[in-house]
Length: 196
Image (cartoon, rainbow, N blue to C red; front, side, top):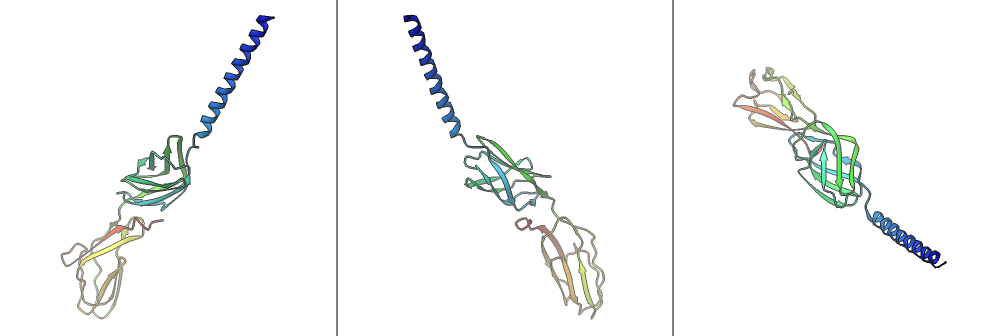
């Protein structure tokens, strides 16, 4: 009988230890944050050269250790709170998901962030203009709009340049000038901060 009581006490002690371990393990597991989720981000695209500021929305961002765009690490990022991160893209390529990593795991967006190549002006020679006649010419450019246009030099009197279009009524004779002529040049760059 003594052996039976001793065995019973030993079994109860083992059960108590097992119960305490289970409670301790459960408490520890309960303290671990869930893996992050990425529900949205804006803008959805930016220049391939990087430098685009992106706002990422989701859950469980506290303690983020990495932010990537299409597999490329962000140049920098700030965890504003558990549901928002502000990140700046580095140079990259392709479309791909936005991902956030924490010690609890990683979460990726359903949609893709797209790196856009720089615009390129095509052609090279402006059509001739006739004095006293209306003139309107859109400079051809490849790439994804919107662009920021700039120019240097002076167009013939009566003409002006805005948003990639030369327009007006010339007050001088005919002209035909290449875009890269010393007198006047035009260039276009991505509006990376307003692409959506």
